[in-house]
Length: 73
Length: 388
Image 1 (tube, rainbow over the protein chains, first blue to last red):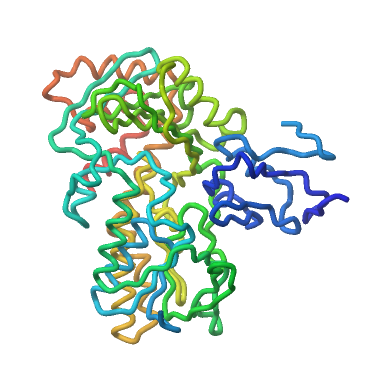
Image 2 (image 1 turned 180 degrees about the vertical axis):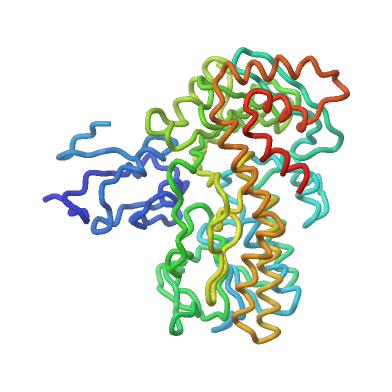
């Protein structure tokens, strides 16, 4: 089962084990689609448009494109 | 804990603590909600600050000063080093202690603080913000307030919920990675900056000492660069080449909103301060001092609004901030856009011409003057910095 993004299939994953929870992606996300707590982060599927800005902004490369479960960046 | 406060501050960083303190000192009832379990930790900061920036709000204290800075070393891509000497310029902070002490000054002024309180929504009364929803130890709670001050950092969402446009263009975000490392031999009184496309395109690389063999080593790169290559890979490269024996004590990531302040930083019942309002000096990326200034203005105006029973008074905050610092940041932002687009050759040329200036006649102004010869269109903006 695919996770549903606002404009189709959700193609972005945040790798929580490697995330530093710095909030860079939350600050740039135009759709307010990333939820960040103390040490917990996730994408709100129905808001995400797969625009990839969070991927470009991540200083430590923990946000990746995910096509059919395969990490491709 | 009360059911209702005059003012709720979301976030206990420097901007939030100073806002709370200035409001509480004027008699307002204030509650600070902090999402992490400790005030001051985790640290996401290079930790350098000017002495004047600190002392406007708290007397200097060796407890949170790791190094006294009196020199800048600016390094061009070809290795040319320009040294600038100042007297009593600034400090390297231990932020986890500094933030803790600042929060304590807010508490002494009468503010209450609750940690591990994750704010996840706002309460509204019509169009006015009238409090916050938050999660505390697994329970969903609410608390009312006449004014909510969002000091929730670069990841701020309090403003968004209130309808203020806070998301920043990814090109304006400096994406940063930093380690605190030992076995890095440095002069403990010098801040080192490195420029150029190999170390930090669209930003700068820093080595900021926290002792003679310990330093914060990190960099910020513009969002456009991040598209091609991450800050982390630049950092690993630099460490491998220059400090192969470095022992990493901490390793952090972070985003610095390097642009002008948001167009709107207040709305009925809500004010934004610090990184949440994008009150960062866009040229240096420094945000502690400017965040504290923003916090002090917001705290003062919020308490006045409570005292006068005039809710609309908080809207005066936008102009008060713009007059004090916002306007300067606009100029700094124009200079940043000029300088960070320089080619390596330009940086080298500036360093060579500057090194002909006698040691005792050097100043940051003279560096800008050298930069000008390479980019005359910067003249207007630079003139403003020194005239305004």
